[in-house]
Length: 529
Ligand SMILES: C[S@@+](CC[C@H](N)C(=O)[O-])C[C@H]1O[C@@H](n2cnc3c(N)ncnc32)[C@H](O)[C@@H]1O
Image (tube, helix red, strand yellow):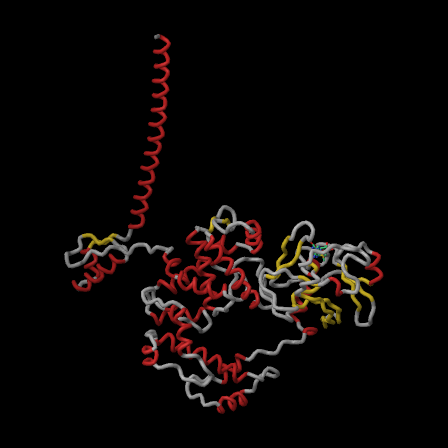
């Protein structure tokens, strides 16, 4: 009995202790809650400081009763608190903070449309690419809470590492970086951006610029300077309640003169971009045709006549400029000749100016041997649209395309130390020796064994990493004598044998060099793809 009582006492003591603990926890919880609510109150007070006005005080500044009531209403709508306001002054609830994520839902229709077109291999206009990129940034910032800086810093390497991890795995809820979870649908959009839009930005990159391996690039292939501004622009384009004309203005300035009805309108009048395609089918843009009249537009089911009309004319104007410039690629066009060419056409409206045509003229590309931008790529070993990928133990690393290359494009060079063929044969056959015969039919060798090379200690030289394929090569090496300022230099350049898409490995047939890789007589077992 005593034992039982003792046990009972222990149980009771334990329960008391537990109760104490609960009380302590509840107390600290309550304390925390109180602290939080004090913070909220003081924040409110702080926010309202200077925002509380008395109606009588307002009247001192605004004597006219009617005007004062209007002012009172306006201030209320901007979040000011007006005390002592008369009955005539309606109480206005301050505008609620807009739901930031709303943009993701509103723009989704257009994004899905672009996604479908890009996935089908179709091209989309520049404004569509910008919108798509901005949407991808918005997903990461608004949906996943990444900071603008984090989005700016995302790298291709990170993306590819993530893709490698998910290869062969269901694409649901995978992490882009760290513990960021993105849905399979978001992943597909980001991948679509990476494959189709980033690739085009790289193609637009001018010599001397650098993408620094960043995932998000602006239209000219350089890293973004302000992703949050991109999100704001996207939001403004879809959700702004500004008058349509003002929006059309801002949309056209950001997309190089072209705008879409869908992009430019307010959320309530937002039109899907498919409508423009349908419009083009009904009224194709021709060199000499007339844009459809308002009546024709309305009859064909396109009430947003003004946007369609303007865009139709913009496209026709570009066509006309291109038409006048056809066949004038050699020397810069002369204003008088351009004027004569224009006079021959029966274009009474939407006629390009001589100046616009002169400005649109692009100087012909210099020959490969004299191409300065190519020479600087060779000298600096900066090649755009390439990345390394690990293909496993046997094959090692290789190079993949990050942008499409067209048949005939130069991909990169074979960089290394120039030595004689005899010297190359004496050196250990590392698998990085490229043998060729020079202009004077002397046996030569480029030794790319050393990594990093002495002249570019901080970068990857891609030529030495290109793997072999006898059956499916997509590039081939060709010898050029480049006219460098210091004198001519024999250079091996890799040329695309066919169109190459993003993600494809760049492969060449090692058998095409005089002595194939691996050195004479060595029988390597190639993993031919
Ligand atoms: C010029 S290097 C290519 C880059 C190399 N994979 C690396 O990781 O640095 C040539 C060497 O790559 C390997 N290699 C290239 N293509 C291959 C293939 N199709 N199958 C197996 N190994 C290959 C061979 O070891 C060859 O000697």
